[in-house]
Length: 90
Picture 1 (spheres, rainbow, N blue to C red):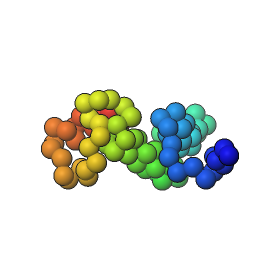
Picture 2 (picture 1 turned 90 degrees about the vertical axis):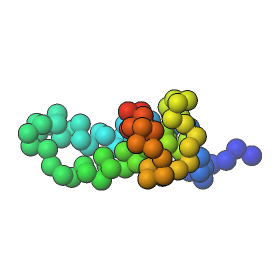
Picture 3 (picture 1 turned 90 degrees about the horizontal axis):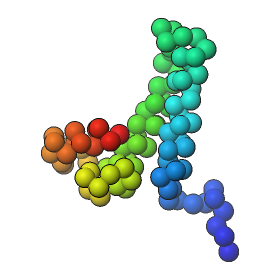
């Protein structure tokens, strides 16, 4: 039996990148339609969600590089150097 995609808990790298792309769409649309000087705060939660997805993909799942991967620790539990490397990947 093939599982229903909506019931799946885990996501692959392509799926996470697609979700980040969608989350960034509102911000990009505002820039294109009303101009960069008139951007509203309406897309703030989308940007926050995209950042959180990227952070989890890098920090916890090791999807974007071997040097910063597979450390299941919060930001305050790792060194400033390691956190900086993670920030670059995000």
